[in-house]
Length: 358
Ligand code: PLP
Ligand code: COI
Image (cartoon, rainbow, N blue to C red; front, side, top):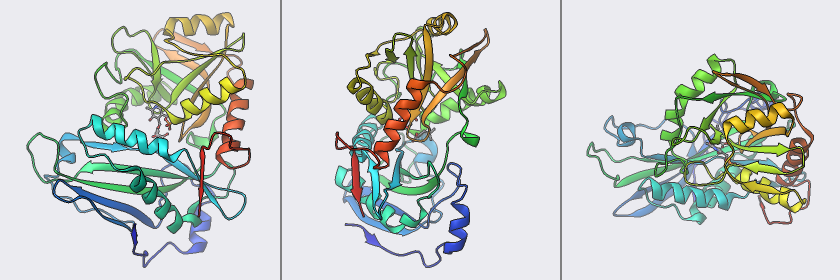
């Protein structure tokens, strides 16, 4: 399905091996990229894997003006043998179609989504780091490539997948992160684009994320846009709260938060273990009160890039509070271990979540 043109100048194997010892997140890229074009006259066409390189864009390309762009994030893992595995890639394909609908873009069929990823990972499998916690982060994305300044859904789009060897998302693999409560900026309003994975959501989160960094925090947590009271999600992760009676809470999906695939997987794993998990709104004041009374024992963030990351401390203009011991908690660690073992093919895959190929 994908024509393959090998990169004539790939990174030499010895150089690649050195780079893969400490990949960090989002700064190294593989030798190839996948691409497919869409136009209103031809539909999806010209599927290929080619040498990764710069794109040449006319200054009037629609995405540069009106930000009609969506993306996904998923990881490829080496499995013990010579195999490769993806975690729930069809969930990413579905979310990509849903994001496309919201942004008035054409829907990429699931077989092209999966085909593009398999073709790229097969070409660049040697770029999957062998280090502990290492993976190949895949970034499918699509943008309006029509050259036109009128405000309307574009008539041409470019879909691409690039791949980036990844280690921990947070510097130094931080044992627990500190988060900043954004009391001024919100991420998404009802009827807006909060449930879509579009670049614009991230663009508008950056000023709040920058504020978080200035305040000595790792990430920002957003409250709902209507009452400024309910905890929604972080700039790039969903949240779970763990209580002293063993139950858990996560904010409900209601169109203003991203329906995380990690979130859904954790819900399934936790419930299967007999943990009661409520998908219900949780107020910022309650979070503080419960942390201080000891009723709340753990909080963790989850997402593809950050996997499962404990939240140790929460800061806001009104002060700060610590969760549990301020470090990783038992429930968080157990769920993380269980999830990552399944993702890496080290534990039985009873839900058909692991897509092996290669
Ligand atoms: N929320 C936001 C805003 C995100 O960017 C992400 C990352 O993709 C998530 C949540 C977690 O989603 P997933 O678990 O599908 O990676
Ligand atoms: C992901 O987890 O895939 C994301 O898109 C989040 C981003 C912060 C890298």
